[in-house]
Amino acid sequence: DADVTQTPRNRITKTGKRIMLECSQTKGHDRMYWYRQDPGLGLRLIYYSFDVKDINKGEISDGYSVSRQAQAKFSLSLESAIPNQTALYFCATSDFSGNTDTQYFGPGTRLTVL
Amino acid sequence: AQKVTQAQTEISVVEKEDVTLDCVYETRDTTYYLFWYKQPPSGELVFLIRRNSFDEQNEISGRYSWNFQKSTSSFNFTITASQVVDSAVYFCPSLGGAGGTSYGKLTFGQGTILTVHP
Image 1 (cartoon, each protein chain N blue to C red):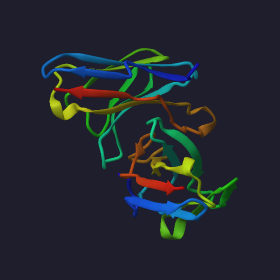
Image 2 (image 1 turned 180 degrees about the vertical axis):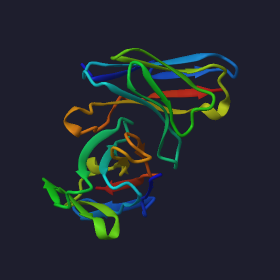
Image 3 (image 1 turned 90 degrees about the vertical axis):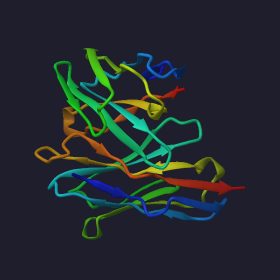
């Protein structure tokens, strides 16, 4: 089984709809992240959480919100989806113990907003 | 803030050729970390290597080798005897160390699309 899972893997929705993307991990890592990838722009950080009670905005948080329900679960919500939120979304986790902090990514969710 | 520049947007080679992907980073952090990730056509991001800012030792892993030069702020990646399976997008993000403004956050460049033709 994959260490970092994302659901759904693909989603098509309409403008104005509320969407939730979910991420779960079995790696036991304390840190979790949400990124979006647009063609030619690499990945950009949306939100990150260093532990359950710690939530921080990233580079492009406008239009998004997150919830860290447990150490293993980190959800990303689009309250009212718009077409320019069409992108590939990645969840990642890392473990700072041992001072490594290497991030491991889930398989991605391809979101299309019509 | 950190910045990563990957000089080549796209590279095309024929199988068995050697290829080097360039990566230049900018940071004001004293401690930072550099990575290489591979994104094959299937879309997932695969971790390849991590290098600490205080460790300039080069590394070789099979056909892959990495050259970190702090003096030129570069962390280049060479694939020897390339294969079709090496075709992917490659990213070299940086991560700020403790006490820096980019602590714990990966900063990505735009990536390099490598195509290896048979």
